[in-house]
Amino acid sequence: MTETINTAAQFPSFEKPTVQFNEKGWGPCELPDTFKDVPYQPFSKNDRLGKICDWTNTSNNDKKYQNKYASSFGTGNQYSYYHEEDETTFHLVDTARVQKPPHQRGRFRNMRNSRSGRGRNARGGLNTHGMTTLSGKNVKARDPRHGRGMGKKFGHRGPPPKMRESSVAVRADWASIEEMDFPRLIKLSLPNIKEGVDIVTCGTLEYYDKTYDRINVKNEKPLQKIDRIVHTVTTTDDPVIRRLSKTVGNVFATDAILATIMCSTRSNYSWDIVIEKVGDKIFMDKRDHTEFDLLTVNESSVEPPTDDDSSCNSPRNLAIEATFINHNFSQQVLKTGDQEPKFKFEESNPFISEDEDIQVASVGYRYKKWELGSDIVLVARCEHDGVLQTPSGEAQFMTIKALNEWDSKLANGVEWRQKLDTQRGAVLANELRNNACKLAKWTVQAVLAGSDQLKLGYVSRINPRDHSRHVILGTQQFKPHEFATQINLSMDNAWGILRCIIDLVMKQKDGKYLIMKDPNKPIIRLYDIPDNTFDSDDSDDGEGDDEGFQQVYNYAHNKI
Image 1 (tube, rainbow, N blue to C red):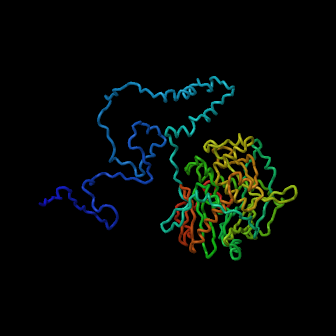
Image 2: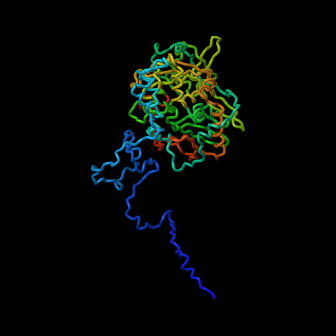
Image 3: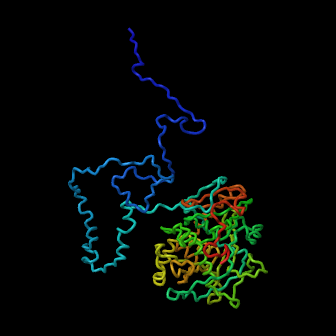
């Protein structure tokens, strides 16, 4: 006898759902009735994600950054909460004090005692070790309750990171080829690069005035404005490099461009360099009328200057001031005058003609070449700022630069007038922390040029609110290679970064390329750009580069 089993009653039926196919894009084709007329709050990827619900009511304590979780599109009223009922009659039933576990009792007893002055080693209390108590100012500085660690412990975060602008606006027709992050670049190394060989030497140098070595805080000297022309000619506009490119080398640049690439891992601000590849030759250039030649101020500081263009302490105005100080200081410390001896190189200054009657800054140019391996020969223009005659009659070439103090309180720095004579190492350490990239680039330029000395001057404002008058408080000199070791600057790593970028460009087809440091990330990007980019004067890169230095000091791009 056969029994028929009804399978339909045991297994549920399966109805095939309707799958929508959107031919014009992605997502559903039709909006379900359930989600119709539902209000939509716009959002941005840059918005910070806050808390869904804060029962502790501590969100109002951060009054300085109340809008840090606000939407960049503005707040909408679709989801606003309106409290209608009165809850003033609500009372907590259990009013008993919560008993702490034994392991938490007396946890902050020592902190309360030290705060009220009844601690064993507190101010005004019993000091059993016989040590002198610190003053109130130092106690506050050393108290961990006033430091960063305690703030992070209780959830008080610092200010949100500042979004910097890029040095040039990336256009839609630019193709990104490569991204190089700093952790990878720091690991690069190209050892055993020999000293550069001189090809051509040009210019005239003035001798250093040794009286400036005796300047100190009590014997300060005003900084003078010296009206001299300073040439900042890019690579392809240099007539000597054009002449040398026909016979020697296949990579051409200036010392400022090379220093920017070699010290790129220490930079925070955005910068860019234009590279042209013609056959097997590479030319590295800077863009005209840009801020490439400006010296940054407190670039690597924990709290960099605020972006307020109306203030004299904005990053751009401070960079103009630092460049102004550096140019004038490098010329003031030299022995000027027609009767003073001068050191002349083989050729004259290539950027002025013989019939021009202008006063040019003291500068000597060395066109040198380096063998980087794999048939790569680098040719670069390097500079000296002055020359010093030793007691034996030997000439030592110098690279002269100036550090400037603008406002030690706003910069969270060291007061130079109090510490420079007694604790110069502390002042230099603070500058190395706040201006790591600038000092590294100066050191690389001195090493590339083969300078015997790197002379640093300390220049400060007469009044912190007056950015037009300055005084020289002291000078200090170093040997470039020894100073590079002190600031942990590896020339092997610097050559490795440069070689990495050269190899990347060598693999590309002939054309124009651009290297740019990301303004907010530790990344360098290589772009393939059209050949006519930056050729027109009315470039729409949005940076207003035609303004030059004329906003504050009213002197031209290449004139002191």
